Amino acid sequence: MSDALDYLIKVRGDALGHYFKFLKDAGKHLDPKTRNLISVITKVDAQTEAGFRQYLTRALREGCTPMEVVDALLMAFPTLGLAKIVWATEILLDMGLPEFSPELIAAQPAWHRVTEIVDFPDDDVRRIDCGPRSVFVYRKGEDFKVYDSHCPHQVTNIPHLALDGKELTCPKHNWKFDITTGQCIAKGKHPLKAFETKVEDDVLYAYW
Image (tube, rainbow, N blue to C red):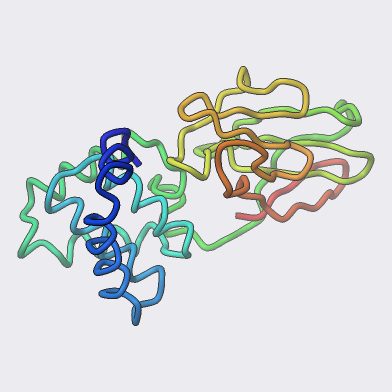
């Protein structure tokens, strides 16, 4: 939420409350994925970049696939037109979401090689590039945690320099995460996206 909207809610929350209630009631019979996908299209139609980024993140979090996003944009062609679809696609590319890469967007979930574990110290954290995706890996004994490097708030790609001990802080809005659990411990409420893992022949794999 922007500072300006925060201000308006504080000074005229009585008036804006009716508007937000209308929006909530208008979509109460839709599942969260569909509701947020419709919001994505409305933000593209209005060419509101911050809103597009916000609702795209929500739609993905609610289970919408990248291909469904692309299909929704193309299906809305009669009202959006090519220029707005290209505008939205440029933002998608700028966000650098690995799920939208040509290599992954139509791929079925599979096991991906992450790293060898022989030289991976216990209680250590590393940021590792795995093709189009980057992940944070935490080891505790024989247990490994693998998290997507993108913040669940606005999918900012978090760099390794954002790691301080076992705490990871997104540089954009200062959401802070406990790398041992993936839970958000400050500013926000959504955890890091975690992947299923397995170890075979001293190699760590993650499923996405």
